[in-house]
Length: 184
Image (cartoon, rainbow, N blue to C red):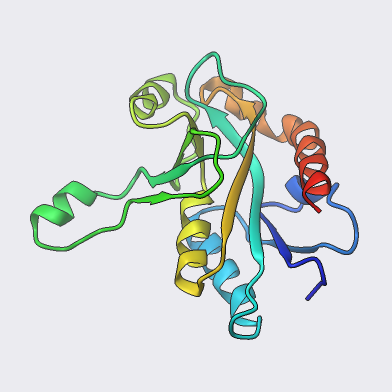
């Protein structure tokens, strides 16, 4: 455990490739389950009361044509859980988390890789960006009492351009690493 008091979390090694040495980095794997398990495991290793600030850096799809660049969402939603149905059946479901120090944007997290314009447009009514890990990371952080910031760089527009995501990751990783460096 590093001395920065920061734990950088990314879904893929490529997204964290340019974070400088000396910063603790956890690569979770892709998707909500992998992210929640990896972050919970990492936070469990910290002494009680000494949890770090978790910075989840990663790429995201823009849900609106005018979105691009870097975002620090103020809220994250779990977009692919049937929360309303489960609530109507008497089971409370947490499907939204507010985040401190955000920029006003909303991130939608789900296990589906969004590359269809119709799916994107439906999500755009609820959020600005889409990813596959943010909600799970924020949820795990809350469970451990850790502060959390989600930092996302737009890599595509959540349509057929998303299929070119692997070619865009390095450029996003450089922007994200620069943002992390400025926070230290």
